[in-house]
Amino acid sequence: MKSKAQPLSKIICLFPLVLVLLTACSKPPQPKRQASPPAATAGTQTLSGRVVRIADGDTVTVLDATNTQHRIRLQGIDAPESHQAFGTQSKKNLSELIFDKDVSVIYDKTDQYGRLVGKILLDGKDVNLEQVKAGMAWHYKEYEREQSPEDRELYARAEEDARSARRGLWVDANPVEPGEFRRDEKREREAK
Image (cartoon, rainbow, N blue to C red; front, side, top):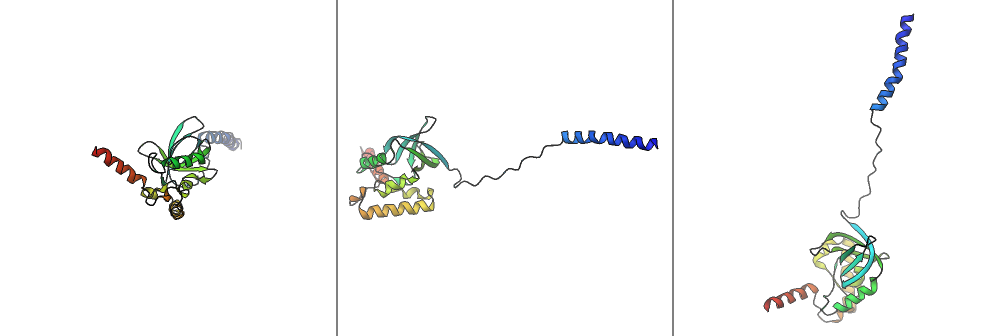
């Protein structure tokens, strides 16, 4: 009987040792990763800061919390050039809307001049759209595919309404779009 008890006692003594070794050598269970909700648009980023400079009716400089300056090109609009009819009024209108105010910028690209191209929000209000509503900018149809379908419709309708009401630059019978104005200036310089 002694011989049967001895192997059983050895097994009982080895069992805790085997458990300790298995526990020590096994990987702890990894926590399950929850999928993060998809972003509204792939690559979209948000920047917050204070507007410290208005270059013209569609370009501003925002100073973020780290004191970094970011030049912002307002997406979806094209304002008159500074030396074009309504250029000064467009800049003034934008300045009255957002200069020295805290804004959010939703952007997803940088243009050829290194500016972030985005939508500026002031207390949830679309500042880019406000420029078009005021008749201080065109809806930039050349780049409308970069806008959401909702924004495309809103901006197009805002331009039509401003045009019908003859607000801002629409008081002129035939206002010249900034792109055309820039091309004409380039041709004049090249002709000299």
